[in-house]
Image 1 (cartoon, rainbow, N blue to C red):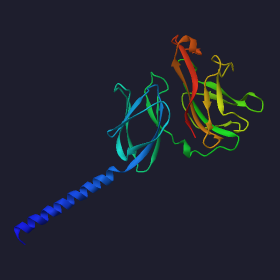
Image 2 (cartoon, helix red, strand yellow):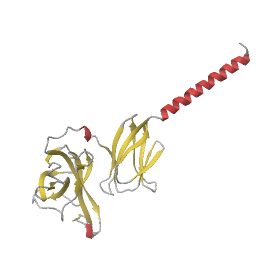
Image 3 (cartoon, rainbow, N blue to C red):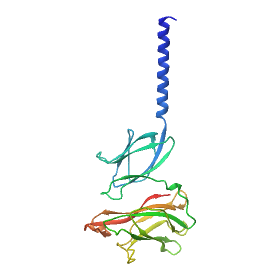
Image 4 (cartoon, rainbow, N blue to C red):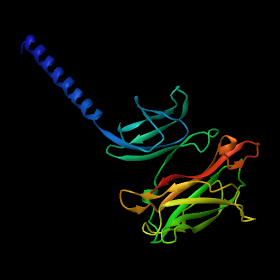
Amino acid sequence: MSSYKKIILLTLSLGCFLLACKKEIALTAQRFGKINFGNQTSVNPLIIDYNGNTFSVGLDLTKNIKVPSGKGILSFKDNKGNVLTDTTITIEENSIRNLVLFQPSPDTKAALIENNQENEVRPEGGFMKIKIANLAPKCLPKNVDIIMKMLDNNLGDFADLDTIENVSSNFGGYLNCKTFTPVTGDGYLLFYIIDPITKQPLHEGFAGVVDINDYNNGIFYNIITLYINEQTVEASGANMTGTDGKPYQVQVNALFMN
């Protein structure tokens, strides 16, 4: 074979090799996973960066964020570029990760939490599974009791559902709590934070409302993770005073609902 023909064959072989590499790179770049993301911080908008892909989210749940699969750094920033936190995660192809950036108060560090409670065994009829943490150290004692109420459509008034005792700063395991059906209850949980010794409310009015209606399926969410937090507010909007003498709004919030 002449040198000329050898050069042509080598050139063609190199071209096919490069073309195959480009196809492989293209195929790799088309692999994706998804993130359902909840922003449980006061930062709005929240800037998220993952492997060079940047997007922003508000305070509501953002579903089906499409991201390239693989391992990378997930970084969270405010709109001034200040990093709240970052972590290394792996996104599997065609997978869905349910993530929440959780910051119960501005003076605590934000933490990324994954919602795995969809795998929790469902409670029996008439019950819901709840776990809750007390994250309001400036306003509340270490342990508190929580009374839950819901509007009873038959009575036209709020009725007691259940009481959760000795709520501490640890989420712990799930507790079985009574609930109404979507027919007899309106699906809005009202909370009262009670002193475990005196059994008296520790605040004015009620401390938060959580809507547990699953409007798409006509049922109530029945596996729920809650937390109590404290936020500094103007005196007119406060329901408690902290140990630092400042006015606070203390309330129960939902972290995950399934």
